[in-house]
Image (cartoon, rainbow, N blue to C red):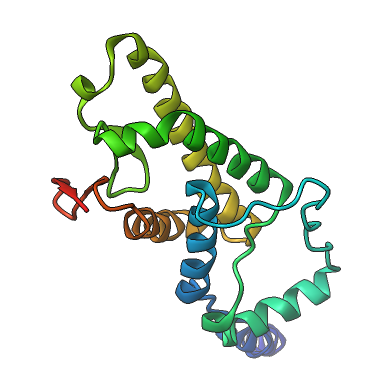
Length: 198
């Protein structure tokens, strides 16, 4: 009986420190805003595109588990000064599609007021009558493709940073940046989902 009680006490004593270790990783809002603004500027055409002979930067190298754990602990202490990774091949491919679609199809319809940025980081047809009838199907298809890519990029950025749970915060940060970077005359939804003209 005594040996059983001693074993239980020993297990509790050994388990106590492990139970008290908590690693808090906070969402790095400032880094996310900076990354989102650069991403959005490139899609909207407000930043220089890389030269044709310039190759995209490679993804960060994979680390052994011990190094990754150390990085996680350090990141939790300095999360507000951390970087957000948005330069993986998947994210860059999505960004290139979005940039091409925006310059070739969507921009004129933002300029006319037919399209607008939603409060949740997507694009919506705000005024279908402002789109010529023969173009409506193509514009609707482009909006659907754009929204699929936006959903994918928010998810991919969260995954690239090792925090699938950040997808909602990344979406909110991007939604804010799309609206902040909208040109004068473009439409966006306010916090009550009402259309406003910038």
